[in-house]
Image (cartoon, rainbow, N blue to C red; front, top):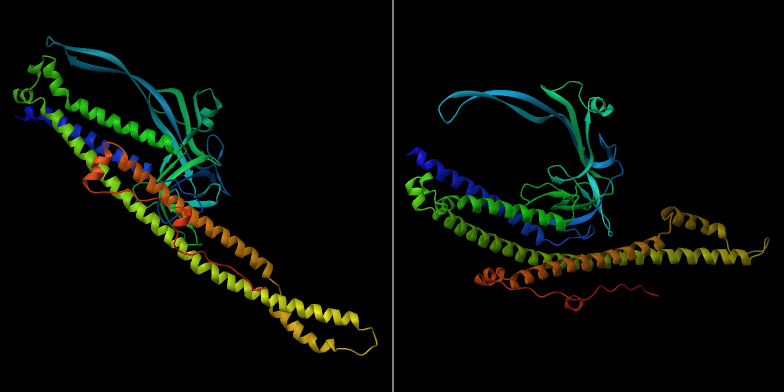
Length: 438
C-alpha cells in the first residue's frame, strides 16, 4: 500500500511546489509592472520604484577587481577530481565492481561588503540602505587560473581541498560606482533629516536592487514563472503520458485508471490561482490610484500652507532692509552735503541707533530670502507635477488592465472601473498668490 502511494504523493508534491513558485513569481511580476517609476525628488512614503546611478562619497574597493563600488561579493572555487570504486548488482544478480570519476568544485574563500549609497537621477538623490535587499549584480571579475598563476595564492588561501586539480575560479560581482541601478522597495522617513530613504521592511512585497533595467527584471520573472508552470504541467501529465505510451503496467492499477486526474486538477488549480492573482493585483492597483490622489492632495495642502508663510517672512525681511537702507542713504547724503566746520545734523547722535540696528541684523538677508522663496515655489510646483504624474501613471495602468482580455473579465466580475486622468484644469484649488507691496 505504501508503494502505491509513493508515486501519486511525489507527483502531488512536485505539482504543488511548481504551482506555488509560479503564482509567487507572477505576483511579484505584476506588482512591479503595476508600480510606476518615481523620481528621486517625488518619492512618497510607501512602495516605490526608482532608477538612476549608484553614488557615494566614500565608496568601497572590491577585493578582486579593485573597483570603486557600493556593494561587492567575491568567492574562490577550487576544482577537485577523484576516482570512486563502487559495488553493484547487475541484471543477472551478479555482484560487480566498477570505477568512475567524480569531479566538482568547492568554495575555499569568500567575502564582500555593502554600504548605504545614494541613487541619483535628473531630479536629485535619495538614500538607499541595501541591508536585507535582494541583489542582482554585475560580474566585474572572473578568471580561472592554475597554481602557477600569481593570482592563485595572492587572492586565494594557501591550502588545498582533497583531490584538488589545482585549478581555481575567482569570481566577483558588484554594483560599481555610477552604475545604472533599478531599485524597488519601501520608502520611509529618514531619522536624521527631512527626506525619504529606501530600506528593508518586513511588510514590503519585495526589496530589490538590480543592475538590470526594469524591462529585463520583468522578463526574467516572467520566464521563471512559466518555467515553473511548465515543469508542473509536465509532472502532472506524466501518468497520462505513460498510459498513452502504452506502458500502463508500470503504474498501479488505480493510478493508471485515473491518470487524467492529476493533469485536470493541476489545470483547475492553476486557473483558480491565476484569477486570484489577477483579482488581488487589480485591487492593489485600485488602492494605489486612490493613494495617488491623496498624494496630490497632500502636495496641494503643502503648497497652500507653506508658501504664504514664507512669502510673509520674506516680505518682512524686505521691508526691514528697505527701512535700513533708506535711513543709511539719508544719513550719507546729509553727511556729504555738510562741509567740514559748518554746523549741521548731529550724526554722532544717531550713530548709536544705527549701530544697534546693525548689531541686531548683521546681515541683510532679503535677497537670499527672495531666492529661497523662488526655489521653494519651483520645488513645490515640481512636487505637485510629480504627484499628478504618479497618479496619471497608476490610473493609466489600471485603465489598461481593465480593458485587456482576459483580465477585463475578472474586473467586470467585481465591478471595477477606471479612474479619469488629471489635467491642469482639474485642480479645484486656486493657486497660491504671492504678491509684495510696491
